[in-house]
View 1: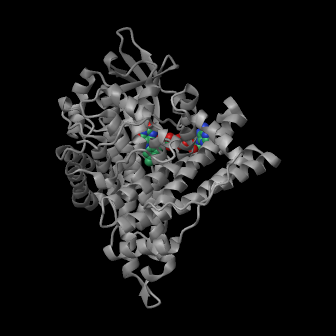
View 2: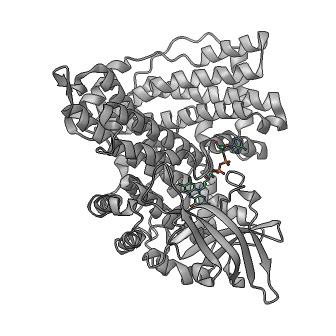
Length: 590
Ligand SMILES: Cc1cc2nc3c(=O)[nH]c(=O)nc-3n(C[C@H](O)[C@H](O)[C@H](O)COP(=O)(O)OP(=O)(O)OC[C@H]3O[C@@H](n4cnc5c(N)ncnc54)[C@H](O)[C@@H]3O)c2cc1C
């Protein structure tokens, strides 16, 4: 399968006034991609959701059976080379599957613990012998994996882990320490454990439960995800063979970070899948629930909510599939060496962090509005709305909190710019010259489909460059201390990438004469209108933190000149999206 998108460097979309190539979109999924996605959707609908009550009662034998079923139908081998029992499909397939697994509630975390957090690091960093030994049994679901990075004292600051690895005279290891919040912890057979050799060299180890000395703590009492196992893992002098180091000694951070790079994008896909299901539930409820003699779906306040839920999910979905296409393009067809995969994931680490933050936050928005649309029924367990809401909250916490990812987004771009990998500094300088001596600009209306929205996104890019450029000039190498400014910059970058992805997808739908092209257009226009307001607010807050007096006035005048975005009638557009969702009783796209 190929997603046929030209090869680009990560982050370069920011430096092009309008994207010079068409992005990959959900509408471009091939029949093979769709078949994989459908297989996953049918599995969730037919086998996982009916088992949810038993999973929530911690029936881990059932969780194992379901993982084995995933193995049977090929869902665990998507990233694994054929030589080790997998299918080695492209990332568009994997993400389309994750998108369909997302709505499986707690089981999505069980699945992610296996596919993203155990299989993936082995594919990326395992030796041939390690892959031969573990991957075939992980791919069938015969054994279950878990990823043990966090500790009570080191969550975000994962490299501060205290778990120790002591080398023995025969070259083997003894591991001691305690890990926290480990998904699949209660029943996993195999653990990717991060520990420090000599208290210093952060290293990944492959640890079998059967080695002895490893035990699981009690199940955590969580806000949500009651059907997924989360426990502490106690390691008491666990003997680990010499050849069970994963990657290199002292290079555990590479294993941890590269695993998370792709895990974040994958989490984004799971979030969009969850949002899609919730929108369907909200639309159906709004159509059946009557108040004041009419369905609540006829009230503007409810239509506003439904329309906005659709628009935000549309943008989130657009950016996830766009990123999948970028990664697939850089990788080319299989087979892929682990190092090539790790490099591709690193190349798009900024986009993956954007996906993690944008999709988890837009999902929480959707689920909160879903509760609201359900009224009192949203607050009781008879309807799934309250569970969706509780289950999703952790998405903003694990795989790197959203605060940490917000810092990473501009941080990684600035680092690449300083290394000369992307010409961000030159672009920021050019922009500075342009805004300081502006030529009188005529108001232009772009007559292409969504031309005005594309111009708006071009303006967001300039705003992002202006904020980043000013921040680099103001703070120099102390920029990392300015978390609030970096977070505002991240907000601008997130809305820029999401907005552009939505507009390009809607334009592609129009060009392909898609029967829903008017709905694509409505979703993209609503999203960009809201993004323009958020971008302006974030940029103003950032600039006001960096300058004052005449300098601030000059920067704000430049911001006004750049960000000339005329508001559109989003009331009508949201109503259109809401009416169509209610008529179909489901999310409209994808
Ligand atoms: C249900 C669940 C499943 C999990 N599964 C796994 C698993 O399978 N494997 C695993 O290893 N871990 C797992 N975790 C742990 C998870 O990855 C951590 O909870 C997460 O990384 C955050 O760490 P923390 O909880 O220690 O929060 P902290 O790091 O203490 O953060 C607390 C707050 O401070 C903020 N903060 C921290 N540092 C900074 C900073 N430098 N700048 C600005 N803000 C900062 C955070 O954003 C957050 O808002 C799981 C957690 C949960 C709840």
